[in-house]
Every structure is written in C-alpha cells, then in structure tokens.
Amino acid sequence: MTRRGVAVLGSTGSIGTTALRVLGRHPDAFYVAALTAHSNSALLDEQVRAFRPSFVGIVQNGADDHREWHHGPACLVEAAMHEDAAIVLNAVVGAAGLDATLAALSAGKRVALANKETLVMAGELVARACEHGGGEIVPVDSEHSAILQCLTGRAGTEVRRLVLTASGGPFRGWERDRLEHATIADALRHPTWRMGRKITIDSATLANKALEVIEAHFLFGLPYDRIEVVVHPQSVVHSFVEFVDGSVLAQLGVPSMELPVLYSLTHPGRIADTGVPPFDPVEMSPLTFERVRHEDFPALRLGIQAGRAGGAAPAVFNAANEQAVALFLEGRLQFGDIPRAIDSALAAVGGAPSQSREALLAADEAARRHVRERFAC
Ligand code: NAD
Ligand code: MG
Image 1: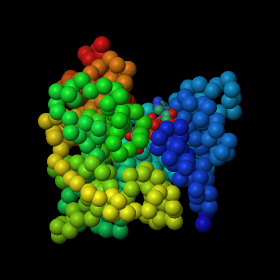
Image 2: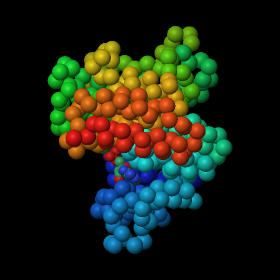
Image 3: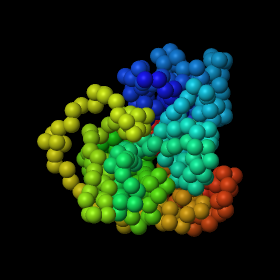
Image 4: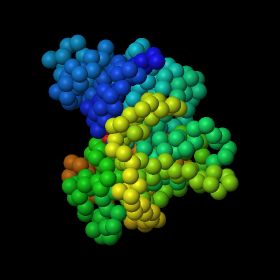
C-alpha cells in the first residue's frame, strides 16, 4: 500500500491530538506531512519530535525558538497546499479554517473536515471549490460520518430523511430560568464527549446541532425539511438514515472521535484498528431518544432558519455564535444571551451580500461587531 501524507491543521486541539493518536497507530498507511497550531508551541514541538513532519506552522508564538517553522495565519494554507499532503485534516476551530479548506479542495485533495464552521459559513463556495478543483470532503463530525457510512455504495435518490442525534448537552434536563444564568463551569461539563471549549459551549446551547444540520445540508444535498434532530443522551447511535421504502439504517459505536477520524482517512475503505474498546450493547443500554425542547434551546431553530434563508445568513449565524461564545467564556455575556445575540445579528445583517469569499468575510465581521457592540458588558 502507498502511504498517504496527512496535514493536520489544529494539531494541538482535541480533534488534532485524537488524529495524531490514530495516525500513530497506522504508520504503514499514513505519515504526518504537516502540522499547524495556533499558539501552543510546547505541545507542537513535542508533536514535531514524535512525527517529524516536513512542514510545521504556528499562527502565534514560537518565532524566536523555532525559526525553521512557518509563522502567521498564512501557514494554514501553506500546510494545506504542501505537496506531501494528500489528505488535509482540518481540525481548526471556527471561521479561521476557511481558506485552508478552499485551497485544499481547489488543489484536488481530500479534506477530512472537523472544522464544520467552514461549511456553514461558505457552503456554496466550498462546493464550487470541490467541483472546480476535483477535491472531496469527508466529514469527521461523528453524525456526518455515521450518515456517510450508511450511504456509501447507495444512490442518493433512495434517501427520504436524515435524523441527526444530539446528546442534549449538560443542560438537557434544566428548566429555562436556570439555563439563563448557567455558569461557564456548568456549560463546560459535557456528559458524553471531551472536546474543545467552543464546541462544548455549542453543545450546551444546541448551536452545535444547528451547525450540523447546515453541514448535513451541504454535504448530502438534502433540503432542510428532510433533516431532523432527535435527542439521544448516550451518544451511541451517531445518526439515522431513513430510505424511501421506510427502512432505517444507523451507525453505532462507543462515543470516541477516534472512529470517525480514522474513517475520514480511509473512506470508502476501512483498516483494522483496535483503538477503541469493543462494542458491548448490554453495557451501552438502555439507548433512549427524546424530542428536542426547541423553546428552551432557541439556537437550534435560529440556525435552521438561517440555513433555509441561505445567502450570508448561515455565515452570520456562525460568526454571531462564535463571538457570543467567546464573550461568554470571557465572562462578558450571560448564557441565555447567546441565542439572543445570534437572533439580533441575523435580523441586523443576515441579508448581507454573499456571492464571494470577501462578501462572506465582510458579513462575518459585521455579525461579530454587532454582537460585541450590543451584547458585551
Ligand atoms: P480545540 O479548541 O480543542 O482545538 C482547536 C485547534 O485549532 C487547536 O489546535 C488550535 O491551535 C487551532 N486554532 C484555534 N484557533 C485558530 C486560528 N485562529 N488559526 C489557526 N489555528 C487555530 O477544538 P476541537 O474541539 O478540537 O474542535 C476543532 C473543530 O472540530 C471544531 O470545528 C469543532 O466544531 C470540530 N469538532 C470537534 C469535535 C470534538 O470532539 N472535539 C467533534 C466534532 C467536531
Ligand atoms: Mg457532532
């Protein structure tokens, strides 16, 4: 087998370190061609010693100690374009990952995409980059990996409906009044997944599920009225696909991101791996499902509305959410204000122009500014 080079963007984060664990078990199939991080130069340095990539990039810090590294925000695109990288695993958080995804797809590469914000803010641009460049996106997100695994080898016309599962986050059973003033520590206590801070807050508001519905729309080409969400607290069923004859397939697995990360590298094939504990249905039981409490978690509906509106609205939804979450984590905004800030930004700038990357970045910046000016204290 020829070994494929992988660029891991965001290698110091939760998905990035998971990906390196997976890659470290499969030196016969893959090698690490490039690594990038935002600012954790100590961990990046350790990773460089372990994996010996030919390209290393860091956005901030490390300029004095590591002159051989590439520095500044441009290192993401440089890593994505590196000639040794056949696969670009984009595990950067937020809109900062957009240009690297576009570059890799335009160069005909596979993008193993954890950075869902990219697809939400610029789904049409990303689709065009795929079409023109011949690249492909394989999702890392567990729900989308599940759907892809159910669909692979089947005709898209056979699908009636997708049902994404949501853990419900740490506030699944909380009353609305209590939710309003939930603390940072409460919101970071996710019941089933250990993840970066931003996605953990998104899981608490259900904004993460809104991002995932939009992501599913762009990945699988289904209209929004054929994508639904159900709460499944155990995070064992990663999503369902209902076919036109009424039959339903689901993909199950222990809640570990190692499984979808590995599949994003090997799709449509699989390679033997024993990284996660064996699946024991008795141990996993009971598996339960509940309706979403839309009234108490309005971010989900706001995101789906933004998706339906199209144009710049998904980019505004994403940017307003990113800004509101950052303010919440700085202690400058209440938990209950996150959906209010998103709603307000969508009303103010959701109809902005969206035809180009520059227009979308302008909408993104306008949404962030709106949230800072109206909601930060
Ligand atoms: P994280 O915060 O743990 O890691 C983010 C990584 O991105 C870090 O390596 C950081 O150095 C880098 N980064 C941050 N800001 C950057 C910037 N401006 N420029 C360049 N690099 C930057 O986040 P995470 O939990 O690993 O999530 C990464 C992405 O994967 C997110 O889009 C998230 O929604 C998605 N995702 C994560 C999980 C999970 O289990 N953690 C599951 C599904 C999807
Ligand atoms: Mg997910």
